[in-house]
Image (cartoon, rainbow, N blue to C red; front, side, top):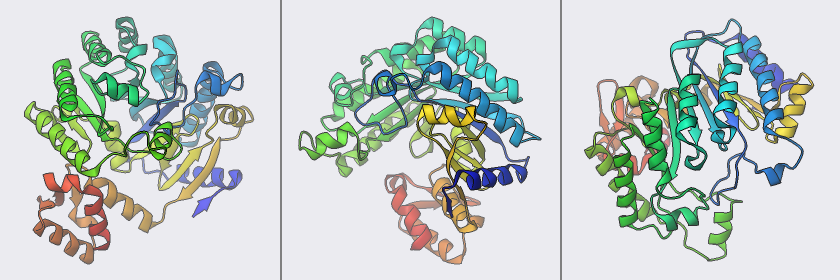
Length: 399
């Protein structure tokens, strides 16, 4: 059931907050909508200074974020300690060490944090420095995620990335030197023009950086992006599915050989302590509140989306109204569908007790086909199954 009326949506969220299960972990996501430039492949809710003009600023955004944090803590009372915090964007590192410290201070004003809280911020390598990482360690951040994409200059140019090829690795080393044990590098593979040699060079650089986590995603061409327009005009070919599969296998083979094992189809970690717990919160349908323009939230089976534009977001909160653009009450069927879709992608597997008889029969056929393997209480994707994960999920659900 989709709800578009602001008042009805707010009532739906309020009802969900009254029905929370306090045994379910609580996560916070904070969306920083600012970027210096727009990358050609990106369709995230981000804005450059030129796009915003005088309608919004980091200062007005931060004031609005504080108001939403206050509202969230009041509505979720009695609240649970926050187990994970993820600052994403956009480019959070544009706020600098001081701005990110103030953001985390605002969270602490309104929420208790668990003793072992995981606190991550995304960063563009070009807007970081040793001093930046020192500031974040002092503020209490525990994990850094750096956008690397590729070590090949021509791939970065095609993606409209502004950082230089070696800067991500240098930033990762600076973060580790500042005391961060958990550092992630984000990669994109399958960009038109990328070669196997380019990908091997990228993996060489990742492994040389000594990070404990890698996220690697096939290039997806999103409608409305500059990249989609270039492909439509015939300036470059679309990504090739066979090439994407080959590149995934190269990545997986080399990362695993170096001790980085997969725990979700697109994520590899150097042991259990290096797994991103905020990712796990999403994939296992924990409660999370998304703070900021365009942020998504999920609490007690209700999902909602904030107003996207920073000015509208700030105005709503200034008027004392939650900035909800739409909300949705998930039905039992919705929740089952999502549980199958999300847990299948994880190495912990698709729980057997989640499936009805027909779905179990489908899973057994997939096991016979070599796409799933059976663990004690779950079905787990094989190496071949990971290449066809979306298709495996469809077959589990519908045969």
